[in-house]
Amino acid sequence: MKKSMMVSLALGALMVSSAAVTKVVTPSVKMADAGGRFSLPSMVPQSFGEWHEDTSIIPLQVDPATQAKLDKIYNQTLSRTYVNRAGQRIMLSIAYGGDQGDNMGVHKPEVCYTAQGFDVSGARTGSINTGYGALPVKRLYAVAGARNEPITYWITIGKKATLPGMEQRLQELRYGLTGMVPDGMLVRVSSIGADAPAAYALQESFINALLRSMDEASRIRLIGVFDA
Image (cartoon, rainbow, N blue to C red; front, side, top):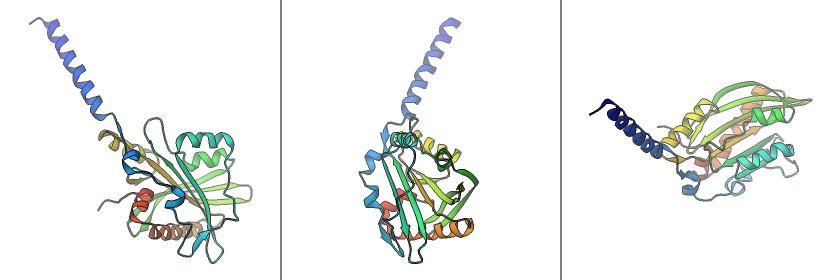
């Protein structure tokens, strides 16, 4: 067999195998379709433990340009302010996107707050000990004039809570290799005050109270499942 023919056959085989692999690993099934419909306002209780929604407080609104971007990314959003018996307030913001593929992505608070004119600093990662596992979180400190806002947030890709950045991308890739397009959720908890350690402790208490109040299916949507 001539050398040129052998090369042509080898190249042809590579092209066929490459096409087959591409077809196998290209995500084609959306988790959002398999998981069933749900409503964030119904999923998240308006009162739990010592906390209840404070309807007198209007959540901070984003500018129209930022809102337009969020509307393209997310299918559902929820913003509420809760207050406890001591008068302490926590702001909860949840955004859900049914497609965390190449054309979708979470809008991180670092970006959102900066776009609103906040100076964002103190970024660090950590975890919250829940009764269901160690929840990976990222903490920030945002300042705009006299407003000091410590922030705790996390991202859930499919059924796995993850830190933003490389871990998030790896989680998306893991689902992609199974042919699944994962959905995603960004959960942000914040409060007003200059004492960041006290704020983070209060936020952790709030998060644990919220998780304990939710049914299993709703809780898994919020924080995923943890490795045994």
